[in-house]
Amino acid sequence: MIKKKLVLGISFFLIFSVIIPINADIDSPRKQMKEGVLAQDVTCRGGLELVIRTNGMSACVKPDTVDKMFERGILSTTKLTKSNAEIVTIPASSMSIVNFYVTDNDLNKSHRGIEVVSTEGLFEFTVNGIPIQGPEKMIETGYDTGQFYLKLELPETINGKQISQDDIILIKYLDESNFSGEQSVQVKSIPLTKTFAEIETSGGGSRIGHEFILRLYEPDANRDSRDEDKISINKLEFRSEGGIKTTLANPKFDANSNYLIETGPNTNIFEVQIKIPRQIDGKTIHIGNWYEIKYIDRTTPSNSDEKIIFKGKIG
Image (cartoon, rainbow, N blue to C red; front, side, top):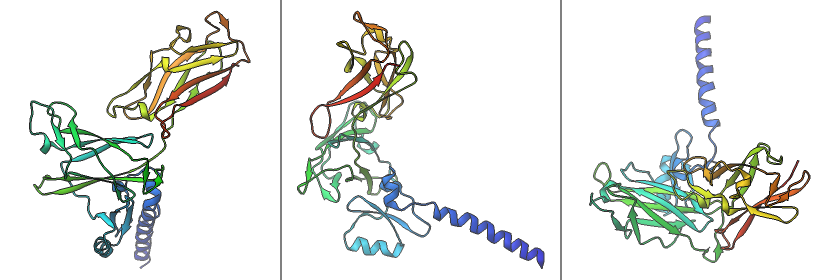
């Protein structure tokens, strides 16, 4: 009898210890999306079903609530149906442009040419549930790829209100024939985020003659989500005391590349290794001198050039 109680007690403890943390560790849909999880990838607690509202926000509801929400017209879709189509997005460029790719081999009808396909009847675009105008055409990325590129230009305002980083873009794509030969809808929900450039250094950036890494966060320079992009180092200006003014392309900086190179596909982070020299163009840099490295971001939300400046002091 004692053994049975012991076994039951252990079994109950194991079940309790496994089940409770699973639910306890699942954040609310809103919190998950704030942390970067896409609406269609939100995890729901057991017994709840994932739905996406017309405003682009996800929700976890009981199965019997889904039909009621659908009848009221507050759901964008009830189920994310499996399909041979796929939507891949590149982060919004300064809250003005969203670049994305749609992979759908059914649209790849000419295997010897690059397809240009009308988007009429295939897409719906909304911001916070409000419809916006989308691109009229999409173009295949190459011969026989089945992948199509679209560029969605966002309006400056929605119903008189300025677009903000908290807004949600919802992209719906009608796949006319999925794996089962049936129509299905693919949904991609994208929270907008600010994409200002930032500069930082690591490893001895204030000591003359010591190598260090200059790191630039610049999503607007991330033009190819599948490969590493580059930024020419002549786009970064170096200034210091005594009228010193040049660019990092000056050979005195002994850069390991003519470019800041993205650290990986779609990271938005660009790096180059340089040294601060003792002299530049006959002018001497002294310990205690200030210096700054400036990058001009020409694609800010205000459509004006913004100077991104890193300031340091020679140690």
